[in-house]
Image (cartoon, rainbow, N blue to C red; front, top):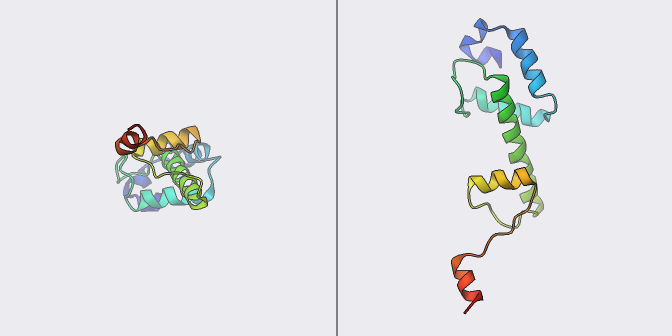
Length: 114
C-alpha cells in the first residue's frame, strides 16, 4: 500500500506499519484486503489521497467491510426479513445484531384497522 501513495516515502514506514498491525490485529484477511483495495482505488472519501490512510482510517474501513460481508452473508442465507429502509437501519441492525422486522407501512396499517 505504501508504494501506491506518492507522499508515503516521507513517513516513518516502520511506525506506520506498527500502527496498522495494532489496529487490524483481529481483522479477517479478506476484509483487510477489501479495505486496502478501496483506499488504493480512491473509493474511500476520508483523508488525503496523497497519503496512506491512518491506522484509524484503515481500521474503520476494515470494520465497514466486515459489516458489509456479514450483511451479505445473512441476506444470502435468507435471515434478513426485509431490506433496510436506510443506511442508518443497516448500521443499527449490524450494531445490535438483530434481524429487524419492518414496521407496517401506512397502507398496511390502515388495512389492518378498518
